[in-house]
Length: 301
Image (cartoon, rainbow, N blue to C red; front, side, top):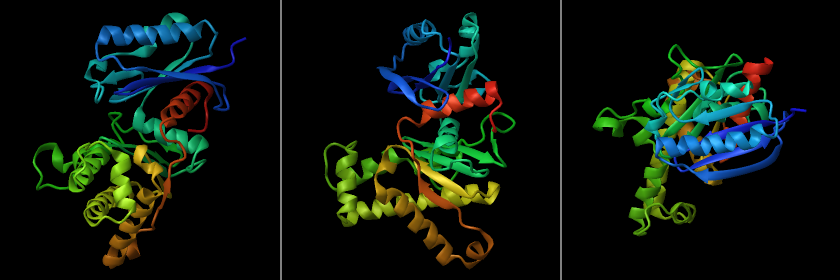
């Protein structure tokens, strides 16, 4: 008898997948390197799907970068070859439900289902990485927008003086770039070394701390911009760097400083809770599955 589900998280580096039950418990999981050759990529996904279809799964839940309208991927973010792929059409022959959701939106669904935003009616998740991912829930509904691009926080313009994309949140508030800047400042040859960067930050290295504090200020600005538009109760901070307690702490401090320095904002805005996301790298697997439940089983969202 069919009882479990397949969830697939397509990322720029890896494709993660898991068999889960309807309570969100992982039965088994795995990952493969993401091929950037379209035909090989699709072949790899086909093999994963076929393996679990043989186990009589009840549905397939996909999560991918890019703008996703219904089940069709547009642009594909860091994986432009995904543009135009519709997994629901591709796997229609199996006669089971197939859903697809943007990775940022998946993260807020994961947190709202089983995480630090559980059962909240007005909340958001921000994923800090190469860019700034986001998903927003308003009045108990996932915010998609007229063109399925609500929550694309990387496209918030934070600094009009910076040329090109550098002034937008995806560049101006990039966690990856912040790590590079810290490592350069502490003269570490490996600019991608996150552990070394945070060791310097946590140890109070003056140069590292200055870069980090500025970064937190930029994330706080994003939260204030979101709050001005949709007025949320809580925002969960995710992404790899959120495992460092100083990240959420620093963002909270930066937000409070804005309020302390601006009486009008302090008296006008109700401060949202800024919390650490429960799920880290596995968030999208859970969020994609919950999206399937929403569409197939009529879950609350």
